[in-house]
Length: 187
Image: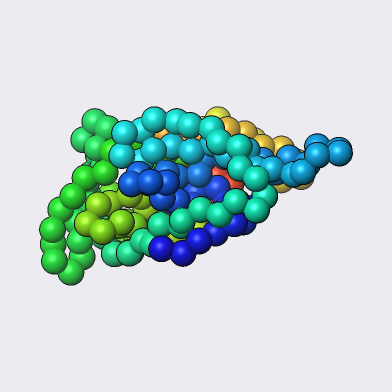
């Protein structure tokens, strides 16, 4: 366990409070005019899914959870469970959609993903910086259209909707940033 100051918390980090693990969902640094600054943090308990808000003083410290990462292959989705297989031991496990959050929009079968473990418990995944996804549905391209500032919505194979240039058509593969969820290029 390493300690981290409240002002150094980042979205997505895992912290340990008591015996429970919490993922930082959102945070705001607040500095009221004549008062001391503080950090307002929104947490999700990863074991039971409950949400909580806390107001931390700038000088407060928290225990950062130490995670192990293992490379696993994403196999398939079964309702709200996502199934993964360890690439070395071939053990299989499933992680609930709630624990994965927005990451589910970037998961395609057979993709190699780093799964984060706290002890023996899978607590989340680390996505690659970009993923290539197939366009399932988009408006047809406009002949002679320039790519100046025109964009159109495209629904990708995972259900994610991104804005793409007019020359991208249904069936094309596009590269999407997993950090921002934005179209980067054709793949």
